[in-house]
Image 1 (tube, rainbow over the protein chains, first blue to last red):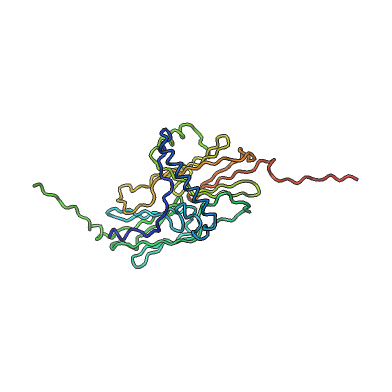
Image 2 (cartoon, each protein chain N blue to C red):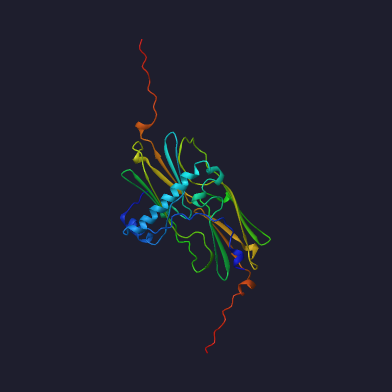
Length: 172
Length: 129
């Protein structure tokens, strides 16, 4: 049941995850190396292969948002990073026990843009699905979008909650 | 949007110690009036954002508020609390006093207007007979 919950995602290059401890030079070096690699790939994006690979692929968003799945006895919580998106840009649907998050990130074009010095953010439509386990109360699913993060709360039906039982361990 | 008091800065610095640092995806483009920097920082609100200018170095730091499992069991994890951090060196011809920053839906936009002297200007040719 748990394995079903793992969303499918294309492998991606991990961006800088070095910890910031400026007092010690080694993690700082590590961080800088990560930045260097990222910059390299960002440059690479603008070259001939860029259009083939898609804008933003080196930075992780590519065409799929990052997603987390968490569970308690009462509910399953799915979160997704959707920077710059508003409620109207995102659709969350459930059918046949599959949760689908789809949306489109459009570039705002309010003013005249002359030259781009840096282009790393990705735009376009995305769509990600997540098979749901049995026992989710589909009528009570809620979704909220705050600070560019989507949270979908999927409460479990009462009978599904009772599923988990602590087994007492007898003393030997 | 720059930090207003030392107290705030001290507290923020304290909380960052264990946050992994991530480089936010950023676009920088030029308009007629200046430079616009847009960075993706999902999970960051105005409370967690710091934009500072020191000499000619602009630093954007955004910290996500804790979005960890909070008693929930993590089944699958692709992101966690992070500190987004990016530094840029600014050109001389920008008006440092008029820099503005805003954050909306986890997206930071910093507008750096060009200094008056750097704006293209049409010189009127005096007409003499």
